[in-house]
Image 1 (cartoon, rainbow over the protein chains, first blue to last red):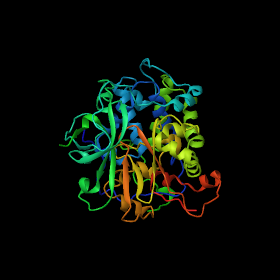
Image 2: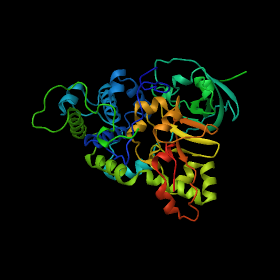
Image 3: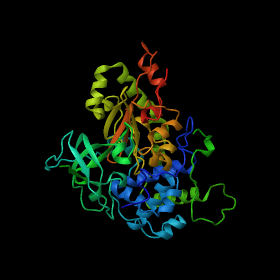
Image 4: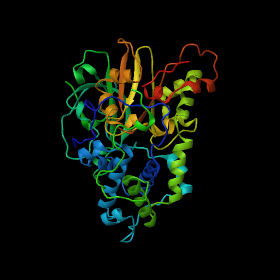
Length: 218
Length: 215
């Protein structure tokens, strides 16, 4: 979807404000909100692509006005309500009104180190042939899906060159919609600033793109 | 642009649809909302409150940019390790004990006299947690996510980083599950330094590509 999250190439958000010796949190609720998002993710109620898509589906003005942890919190509430894990009245009041739905796993404190240390690799075996090799010139397809995609708008239709091959990875456009992992070849593609932005510099942007986003240029 | 801590976030922290008063409470509407959700999710048995404490402690005290600095210092002092990082950063970094969530597929980007690497996630805020911890506010901010790809040199100037015109600024947009760690150039004047001394001068921003390491 062409959502508010697809920020690359916008101007108008002002300078990058950064601080020296930044603390991990800026307000007491932030660590709680952060930990809740992680712990709920560990229940296995959604995958990472579904979680990202929930954030993208927040209303654009809400997305742009929210701080990061606020945005994560709002998106998780959207998911909790959509999945029936929580209802809107419960969320408003902070008390259980209907029984809990079963979840795949509840992460206990002693399980956390192992869960974090193993993570969730996205590489998957696949029988698909590798379409492109390093050095291949490609063009990004132009499409505007209504659902989730990890193809930024600013790269659509642009010509680039394969600079790395990462094996076959879960395809988010499918996995975000309950359509399976459908692993595809994943590449790093280098685009010159000239091709992306019409800029006469030596600079470039590399983007990680799945095979179905790309076609070889004749 | 450098700013004071209290103004760190150029976006409002607070909620957007709570206009009722909470007399006697010092918590903001958003803080109350987060607190209420925590109570609810604990009551429903979906989350263990002690697990929340462990998660918070992990990213406050155990996982942070000191991990990445150790990786960089080792790459500077051990050519075999640097070569391993280039071939298989995930395995090389795992050999130092840094693995897992948001670092499952690592790539190390070596800065050279020809190339300055810089990392962004324009679509969300992907960041290599096991080596750098949680991302700073600016990395997740709309200005950085929007501008890093279209005007990286202007963004770098706001970090007081100036890259010679002849040197390519190569921006890596983390759109997949590959996570990038920039290996900055080792500064002159650090010959003979120990790994520990070197790790002490490696900054988080240098490992994102918005900083340069100086001795």
